Length: 464
Image (cartoon, rainbow, N blue to C red; front, side, top):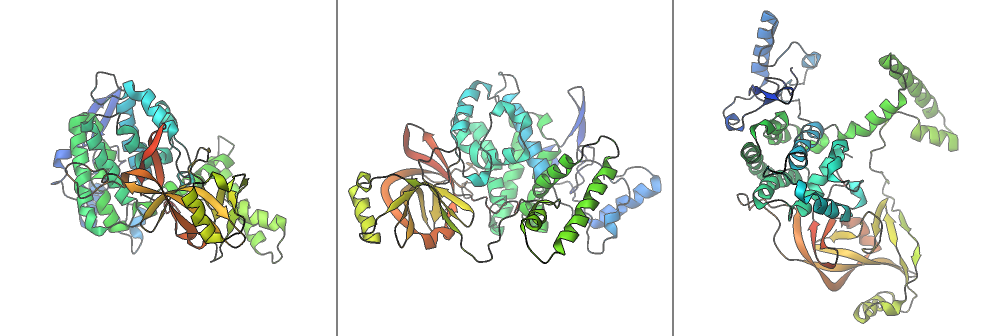
């Protein structure tokens, strides 16, 4: 089929798009007002279009010719093809929005250049949990951002950063995309919400054409209107996207040094690697060399969650010299009730099955202290160990206001909420640590940490 950037390039419907002048050339835009009545592609009309292409020797409705995949017995050429969110949304829609926000002229109502210093200040204050993998970079460097950075910005940084820097009209519009992607990328997707999410995405595309300009509605924006149907057909976008191959692609490209005969060089490297892997796997005895070769030599992705086979791994960080008398009296009494007269040691961090938790005042660039245990959300204040027990002490939080939502879709709120940080605490025994969920925290102001924003969205399940 034609590329998504060409006329009739949509994999899912027969919207042709329109080629318009853009820069020094042309690009294809999709009018959002005819989304709902354009017929969808299906196997039947695809085969009809393919027959016309074959007989006329000309591209018909975007179909260029036969595809070997159509010979697979259980492969439906249309239903089994997915829209990849890594390229379409994060390197497409998000990068386009950044261009409008930070590369347009100041006279444009959507331009955020005048607030760029404040936005960068707020971004650099963000300390995400290490599951996010990368702290944010300056927004003016967005041209060098990877897809993962745009994803993290959308899910975690954009709402608290834009809340006070973007006008309400544009913020309310962008909320439609934030909330839709939060729902579609959450660990549990509610079928009952999908039709509503589809309406939100269509509204986002239609309003983008009004709030920005018609050039914005390229294929990436149009494909947003098909995300929900792809989720119904193929399951969560997290399971069918290119993120899983991102690291593997990087390893492969770094292994190739030449500029000519790249295919031959890769096949040679792959063959040598395969022979080594087969040889190493045939060894029955284990030693350091065999273990190293088995773990690192094969061309494979290491972006996999660790399988502990039911074992519990618990490791404490360094000891903190903390005088028990410096802790407020009610909390000190509760600690003594828990451990009796035993001596208590305090630590800066704890690893539970490769997952890191730290104290809230830890000064690293990541914040692994905000946790949810059942219905309780807290910020880890102390990590303690006595002779017989290990436990965490978390400062309670209380929700101040309801989650953020778009004015037209109040029944589908964001995972972000405003919380008060309380002066009360709850205890987490080491047997409960595996039940914890790490959350994202954003302080409103560094000087006043009694009020904060917390996202209840967990992304540990993504791209595993």
